[in-house]
Image (cartoon, rainbow over the protein chains, first blue to last red):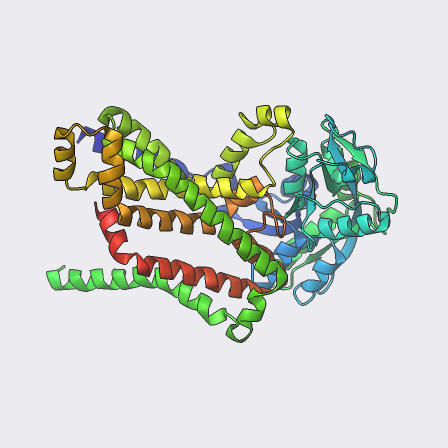
Length: 253
Length: 263
């Protein structure tokens, strides 16, 4: 009996805690939530821009989903409720053309080869990936960072070794090279900038092949067009550009 | 409410419950491109994913049997007080979220892992991103199922033969080998099939710990995940076969499963 009472008490306490309105849910219940699907590589910058946006629009909370643009595009085609889509490639924006008829290029980024600072295999140039025993990874072939990686490697032409894993999104690749689980990884320059303390960067010679462009647009099915439009404007604003530039994104247009 | 009304209420909820479990599977089969099923399953990427999943899950099952049966025996016959603490711990992976399972395996065997660090420093080898990581993940998530079922089988063996053997001064190991094992074949088989199905289906933990490379570590469930980005029909085709396997397993083992989990 005693035990059951204890159990009940814990259950009630848990429920009370879960059901009590936190700051975020207060915002949400009183007003509106804007859902933004954004490329995995935009995680940090968009969160910064989102906070600023929330500060300027009291009562609005921005909910992000950061995944590979190709995955997000698939989810959108399957009917995911979303107000704004920011893609890391022209291709994935084209996939959802019917849903996002108008989009603007707002940044560019290029893939680089990154190694942990403790660089056991002394990888200093891309051909060093061919060294025996080196474990390196990149994004899956259809994910924007994978498309750019494939193009950059093809342009380089001298890397004959194969990656040991094709990861579903760039943030998974970054996590594995930052933790030292692999010897090298093809990630974005912006990922390197965010992890300067622990990573070393090696650039590809053909920067055009390694570059991908970011597009953003309002989703046609959004129930809050005006708000979605103002989020897009926030990304395109001087402040948005500043945040992106500081993170290492290349200015587009 | 009258008794009759309660019965009707119960029946309505039960029907709803059944539908929640059944409809998704039925829906899956309506989406399968039956006409092109074989050609989609025999695409090079599908073939290599299926092949990898089959051999790695079977190897994992074998390891589960070799290690799990003795473990189940100790749990069934060991010191009650110790066993009552150990049993929940070895069964924990059953309820562990796959991502947490993946994190745990990385924490142990990653290059900076608890053990992995020493292995890597000594040999330059680390388990992540190898096929052995796929197998290890299968063992980790599958073995608890085998232990659960086999332990229950051992507990419910008729005690007369063991008592007789004890009078004849048989050693515990002899009793295990000559009496308990032969009588538990059914239980071991059931546990092995469950462990196999679990290892075959693992996705999250495998992707985190073993990575995903076609031909090396990209398993059948991972292939489903990646196909959703490029070809939904192929993803449905690959899913359907896994679903058929699952349904076949629970049908084939329906008696054994009821016995195993009822005890």
